Image (cartoon, rainbow, N blue to C red; front, side, top):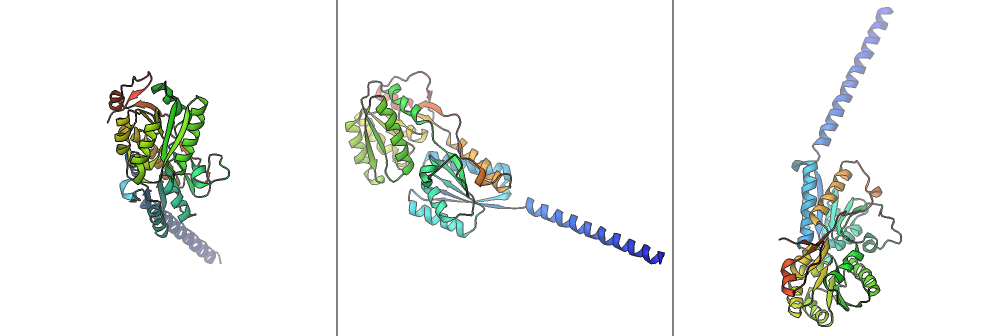
Length: 329
């Protein structure tokens, strides 16, 4: 009996050892599988212009740096400024069950939000998430499957630049696309600050790229200075705007560097490449399971820079106030 008991104990020990080895092998296999994961990321960029291009580039480079080139596959699509095309792109991303969607600009975020409630969505170059997503309440965190970064620079400080560069201005024209809700939000906020400073404010809205020339002419003929927020339609037509405003000798203050570089005298600008990298870090945290997107607050660019455009300031004979950095191509 003792011999039989000894054999049974030995057999049990052998089984346990094999089981442990199997678990170890399984764990090793699982770890190996995890390390060989290739993450699929769909990128919907609303339009092609410098700011959005820089945000996409920064995002892709940061994700690639942290995950490794062999562990991430990007499907980058450009909607060419058409919100219906953005909807098609995001619906395709949802049907292909991407691991994450980057929505570059407000219309892309809206399209992605409508396309899926399960795939993580990160916005970038989105000014105001509450406005974009029509949220009744917003405490800084969207919740659900959405978070991201905002390109909003302090609007009260942007409005102060009007007095910095055109101290004798009495009439302010605000030029933006009526189809972009975040542009409307910025326009309304800047108008409030400008009216408090004694400026007469008139809003001039673009319906699309076709009426940029005519609407800009209206604004330039009736304004001492023009303000353009972070507006994708205006950004894509900035050279056309410049041709009109420069001829009329009307200076333009802008909401971001890309627009300023082509038609503005000054901006309080963020670094869109840096904003993209910031969004990329968020993506890696989500994909690797370190953070849950539902609990991630929207992030903002911390150090906007006061810049001026030397070329346009010189053509308009504008004396640049102290504290502004010259924009360099």
